[in-house]
Image 1 (tube, rainbow, N blue to C red):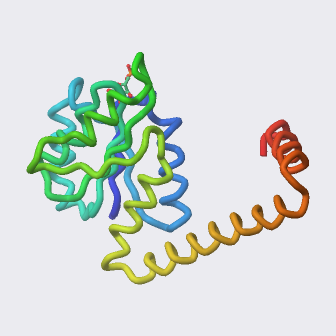
Image 2 (cartoon, rainbow, N blue to C red):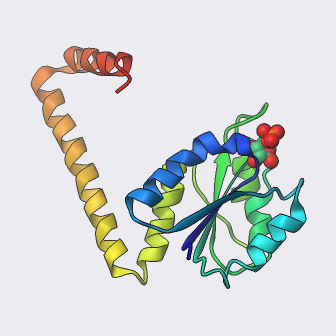
Length: 178
Ligand code: RP5
């Protein structure tokens, strides 16, 4: 059974959501991934939200761009926590989606991460699941330790080689696609 339901408003959101799914897989979180739109397929979106609890879903991640009503729409039909992932798209480049999610009227909250911040949506889901799942909580603490070590290593290296050499190395890495 899926612990997390990842729902995207359109298949055009999938390249961004790949980053969410990768983190969920890294943590061994069971997830389901599907497409439903608050505007184009509202009945399908409503059904997914209404049955989330009985499907065993503990967190919903809803990704959408433009006037993105999907997370708020889903949240209206379930008490399962909803994380909104605003997708960068269209003339306003995701600011519209960010506001649509973060500025939910009082009473039905949507936890909102940054525009295209697919990774944070998954990490927040893991943290929520970790409230009652000790193994997951431990994995999250280890993940953060690894992250901190990597940053400390970079700081030591910067101090050793100096700004110009450091930036040149980064540039080379970028060229190599690293
Ligand atoms: C939203 O509109 C979707 O979530 C997507 O981000 C955006 C554009 O959708 P498409 O026109 O690419 O299907 O509903």
